[in-house]
Length: 195
Image: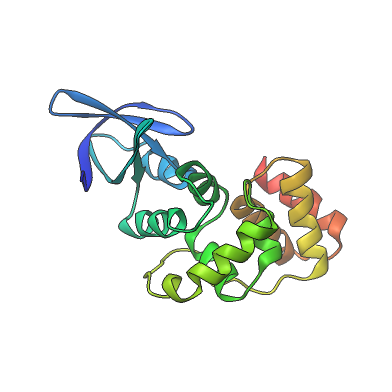
């Protein structure tokens, strides 16, 4: 198995990176978090990888941290969750937020993620609840219970306006810190912060 790649970024897109390693260019599928971690870096970079093989496909997935890779591997261990859905989940939310949604049985929050329906959300909670606590996830602060107005604002930003879950949550939290309380105020201030 290829554990990691270390090389220079040749091409960086929204969903992949081409890394030049000893004269060979590796195209690696990556999450939005990894795109952000790689953006603007000069020189040699290191990404942790997972090689996924099926009889019809061979794909390399890359991650900025070993913890993100570990979460990806946990996700694809769940029945009905393939690598593309797992990458979609990692791109739409933060590992900390996802872990806390699992630990708090928040099926409603999981259903908001692209590619996750009711049954998949239930399977994720049942199959990952004990395993996810073992991953040392860093980064985002703990998931604070959101008010109804905050949840409505987040849903407006994600479902109607196309923002991903993690950026919508951060923007709404920052909007709330400025004194916004109604759903309309939260959405307006969050949009101003996101633009």
